Length: 136
Image 1 (cartoon, rainbow, N blue to C red):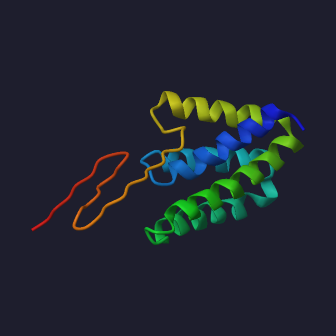
Image 2 (cartoon, one colour):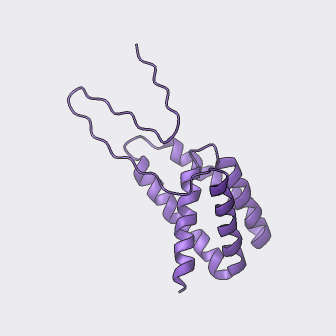
Image 3 (cartoon, rainbow, N blue to C red):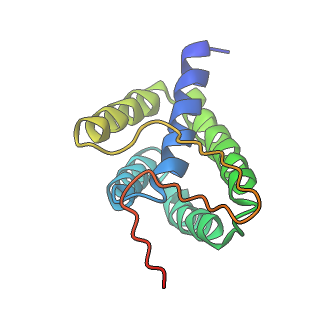
């Protein structure tokens, strides 16, 4: 199996899931759907539903499970994209171009991982973007 395709599928699956919680989600979603329509038109509607379901699952996950859900979704999307890339290398090239365009536009391409620990009455606030905290 081509290690380049594996690496691209890994980065692509991670980018899809990482974008779910960003302002760049609609752009990435539209690009993935357009790519899917081009290479697998019969399953494009299913893909759209799966993208929306994945995003909903990520947002619905309890705070204690978010990282596990994120990892599971990344694995699922990596596998799905690898299958597409193995079937048609042109799809891999187009997806790579999509990721490059999004990176140039400022959409995140990397996976962001946070880890924090609070004890006693400590608090932790983490964000990869804007964060507004209102306490009384």
